[in-house]
Length: 150
Image (tube, rainbow, N blue to C red; front, side, top):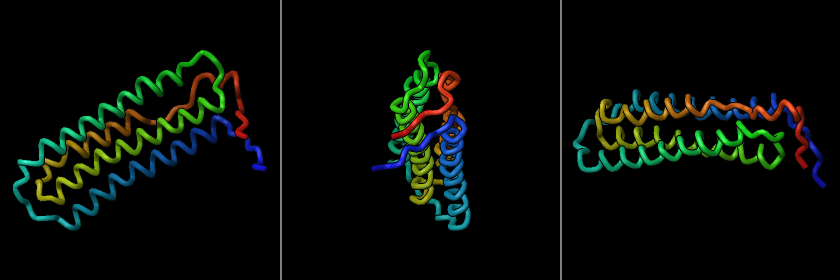
Protein backbone atom coordinates (compact mmCIF):
# COMPACT_ATOMS: atom_id res chain seq x y z
CA UNK A 1 0.00 0.00 0.00
CA UNK A 2 1.40 3.38 -1.05
CA UNK A 3 1.35 6.28 1.37
CA UNK A 4 -0.98 9.16 0.57
CA UNK A 5 0.75 12.46 -0.13
CA UNK A 6 -0.86 15.86 -0.25
CA UNK A 7 0.30 18.07 -3.06
CA UNK A 8 -0.31 21.77 -2.66
CA UNK A 9 -0.42 24.27 -5.51
CA UNK A 10 2.89 25.65 -4.27
CA UNK A 11 4.56 22.20 -4.46
CA UNK A 12 3.16 21.52 -7.93
CA UNK A 13 4.34 24.88 -9.22
CA UNK A 14 7.75 24.40 -7.63
CA UNK A 15 8.24 20.98 -9.24
CA UNK A 16 7.20 22.34 -12.64
CA UNK A 17 9.56 25.29 -12.26
CA UNK A 18 12.46 22.98 -11.40
CA UNK A 19 11.78 20.94 -14.55
CA UNK A 20 11.34 24.09 -16.63
CA UNK A 21 14.63 25.54 -15.44
CA UNK A 22 16.49 22.23 -15.92
CA UNK A 23 15.25 21.88 -19.50
CA UNK A 24 16.03 25.54 -20.24
CA UNK A 25 19.53 25.10 -18.81
CA UNK A 26 20.08 22.22 -21.24
CA UNK A 27 19.81 24.72 -24.10
CA UNK A 28 22.63 26.70 -22.52
CA UNK A 29 24.66 23.52 -22.24
CA UNK A 30 24.10 22.80 -25.95
CA UNK A 31 25.41 26.27 -26.78
CA UNK A 32 28.36 25.87 -24.41
CA UNK A 33 29.37 22.59 -26.06
CA UNK A 34 29.03 24.07 -29.54
CA UNK A 35 31.11 27.07 -28.54
CA UNK A 36 33.89 24.85 -27.25
CA UNK A 37 33.84 22.27 -30.05
CA UNK A 38 33.32 24.71 -32.95
CA UNK A 39 32.68 22.13 -35.67
CA UNK A 40 33.90 23.05 -39.16
CA UNK A 41 31.48 24.81 -41.49
CA UNK A 42 30.22 22.63 -44.37
CA UNK A 43 27.43 22.82 -46.89
CA UNK A 44 24.19 21.56 -45.36
CA UNK A 45 21.76 23.20 -47.77
CA UNK A 46 20.18 19.87 -48.69
CA UNK A 47 19.19 18.93 -45.13
CA UNK A 48 18.76 22.42 -43.62
CA UNK A 49 15.13 23.00 -44.77
CA UNK A 50 14.06 19.54 -43.62
CA UNK A 51 15.44 20.01 -40.13
CA UNK A 52 13.92 23.48 -39.86
CA UNK A 53 10.62 21.99 -41.04
CA UNK A 54 10.72 19.34 -38.32
CA UNK A 55 11.51 22.02 -35.75
CA UNK A 56 8.56 24.11 -36.98
CA UNK A 57 6.20 21.12 -36.74
CA UNK A 58 7.32 20.44 -33.18
CA UNK A 59 6.94 24.12 -32.32
CA UNK A 60 3.37 23.96 -33.63
CA UNK A 61 2.66 20.93 -31.46
CA UNK A 62 4.06 22.74 -28.40
CA UNK A 63 1.90 25.79 -29.11
CA UNK A 64 -1.17 23.59 -29.52
CA UNK A 65 -0.47 21.81 -26.22
CA UNK A 66 0.17 25.09 -24.40
CA UNK A 67 -2.72 27.12 -25.81
CA UNK A 68 -5.42 24.47 -26.18
CA UNK A 69 -4.69 21.61 -23.76
CA UNK A 70 -3.00 23.47 -20.91
CA UNK A 71 -5.14 26.57 -21.44
CA UNK A 72 -8.30 24.51 -21.04
CA UNK A 73 -7.05 23.07 -17.75
CA UNK A 74 -5.95 26.47 -16.44
CA UNK A 75 -9.28 28.12 -17.15
CA UNK A 76 -11.51 25.28 -15.95
CA UNK A 77 -14.40 26.52 -13.82
CA UNK A 78 -14.48 23.39 -11.67
CA UNK A 79 -11.94 22.70 -8.91
CA UNK A 80 -8.88 20.80 -10.14
CA UNK A 81 -8.93 17.07 -9.51
CA UNK A 82 -5.97 14.73 -9.16
CA UNK A 83 -6.56 13.51 -12.72
CA UNK A 84 -6.50 17.07 -14.10
CA UNK A 85 -3.30 17.88 -12.22
CA UNK A 86 -1.71 14.74 -13.67
CA UNK A 87 -2.76 15.83 -17.16
CA UNK A 88 -1.38 19.31 -16.53
CA UNK A 89 1.99 17.92 -15.49
CA UNK A 90 2.02 15.57 -18.49
CA UNK A 91 1.27 18.42 -20.91
CA UNK A 92 3.95 20.63 -19.37
CA UNK A 93 6.57 17.86 -19.52
CA UNK A 94 5.64 17.20 -23.16
CA UNK A 95 5.98 20.92 -23.91
CA UNK A 96 9.37 21.04 -22.19
CA UNK A 97 10.66 17.96 -23.99
CA UNK A 98 9.46 19.05 -27.42
CA UNK A 99 10.82 22.56 -26.89
CA UNK A 100 14.19 21.11 -25.97
CA UNK A 101 14.15 18.93 -29.07
CA UNK A 102 13.77 22.09 -31.18
CA UNK A 103 17.08 23.26 -29.71
CA UNK A 104 18.50 19.80 -30.34
CA UNK A 105 17.74 20.25 -34.03
CA UNK A 106 19.87 23.40 -33.94
CA UNK A 107 22.62 21.46 -32.21
CA UNK A 108 22.46 18.75 -34.88
CA UNK A 109 22.54 21.32 -37.67
CA UNK A 110 25.60 22.98 -36.18
CA UNK A 111 27.37 19.64 -35.63
CA UNK A 112 26.66 18.70 -39.25
CA UNK A 113 28.44 21.84 -40.38
CA UNK A 114 25.83 24.59 -40.54
CA UNK A 115 27.02 28.01 -39.52
CA UNK A 116 25.69 29.80 -36.43
CA UNK A 117 23.23 31.83 -38.51
CA UNK A 118 21.63 28.68 -39.93
CA UNK A 119 21.29 27.01 -36.50
CA UNK A 120 20.18 30.12 -34.60
CA UNK A 121 16.43 29.88 -35.45
CA UNK A 122 16.20 26.56 -33.63
CA UNK A 123 17.82 27.90 -30.47
CA UNK A 124 15.84 31.14 -30.52
CA UNK A 125 12.64 29.23 -31.19
CA UNK A 126 13.32 26.83 -28.32
CA UNK A 127 13.90 29.68 -25.85
CA UNK A 128 10.71 31.40 -27.02
CA UNK A 129 8.77 28.15 -26.61
CA UNK A 130 10.10 27.79 -23.07
CA UNK A 131 9.03 31.35 -22.26
CA UNK A 132 5.56 30.62 -23.65
CA UNK A 133 5.39 27.41 -21.60
CA UNK A 134 6.34 29.01 -18.29
CA UNK A 135 4.46 26.85 -15.75
CA UNK A 136 1.31 28.05 -14.02
CA UNK A 137 -1.09 26.26 -11.72
CA UNK A 138 -4.84 26.24 -12.39
CA UNK A 139 -7.04 29.05 -11.13
CA UNK A 140 -9.39 26.36 -9.84
CA UNK A 141 -6.94 25.67 -7.01
CA UNK A 142 -8.62 28.50 -5.13
CA UNK A 143 -11.50 26.21 -4.30
CA UNK A 144 -9.25 23.19 -3.73
CA UNK A 145 -6.18 24.20 -1.68
CA UNK A 146 -4.74 20.70 -1.46
CA UNK A 147 -5.12 17.67 -3.62
CA UNK A 148 -4.65 14.21 -2.26
CA UNK A 149 -2.70 11.85 -4.50
CA UNK A 150 -3.46 8.19 -3.74
